[in-house]
Image (cartoon, rainbow, N blue to C red; front, side, top):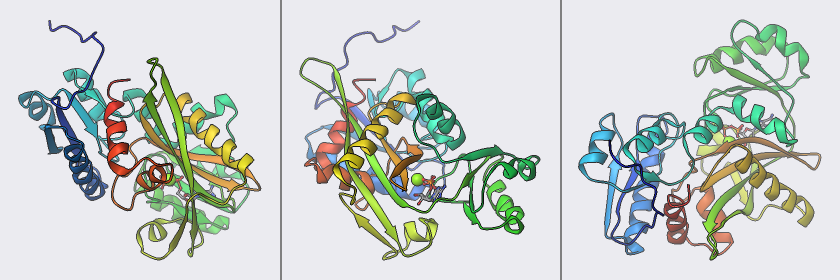
Length: 321
Ligand SMILES: Nc1ncnc2c1ncn2[C@@H]1O[C@H](COP(=O)(O)OP(=O)(O)O)[C@@H](O)[C@H]1O
Ligand SMILES: [Mg+2]
């Protein structure tokens, strides 16, 4: 039986570090782009033994053979952001950045996230959790228009706005192609925004959790759908978002509360819809994108943390889990 690590973890410039990217999900391409940037940042920061790994089903063997000590997890979606790779790393005794098994699994699932967040009084949009058999009955509890979301997806994939009951069957069909569990929410008009949450160790050894400035979106499409997210010019980014001081602080504090309530660590990005001055939490992203145009690097930069510093902060979160 090998010893379970109990000593205080300390990453050095000579530590064996793996940057995990790519993977098996449909967000693989974005993750590969993020991974290359993160790898370069660690080299720029003077880390001498960094390996960029495109994760496949042999990942456990690859990590073991390379004697990896720390992993920076830049995977998105299934297997990378849902607790699976985190479990592999735990099993191998490799310390890793970001969220642990439990918080990753909770936050991958929008239904589960809302269940957990509802315990601490965070504003949440009225919704029902449905499947193919009960949606016709459950939907009667809500007011139109609605938005139909697969529980375990991202990038607005499988999501449809439904204005009247006649449109529901079709929207459900689209969502059910992605997932068995579907979240139906009332559709609210408002402003979309997102907040990064980061952690660092203070001098006395305690952990400080802090929020980045808020990034606001204005889209030319009706809502922030897949087209708006990935077509250049359809979305205007406002950083920092145009909320007054009081609302800004409220949103940032809610982001930190949501991060902590779901048991997140190291890094997350919390999405909001602000309607009638109420900041509703939509979801928590536990492995935010790290490409040149991703939200979190821009948010960190706005508060004086450049890309390389952000990557180092995320790496160091492997010490504090
Ligand atoms: N209930 C809602 N009412 C209006 N717009 C919404 C609602 N839910 C989501 N949206 C819009 O859709 C976008 C994506 O939703 P989100 O829940 O964050 O899922 P994803 O995982 O696809 O990012 C949000 O940024 C917001 O603009
Ligand atoms: Mg989102």
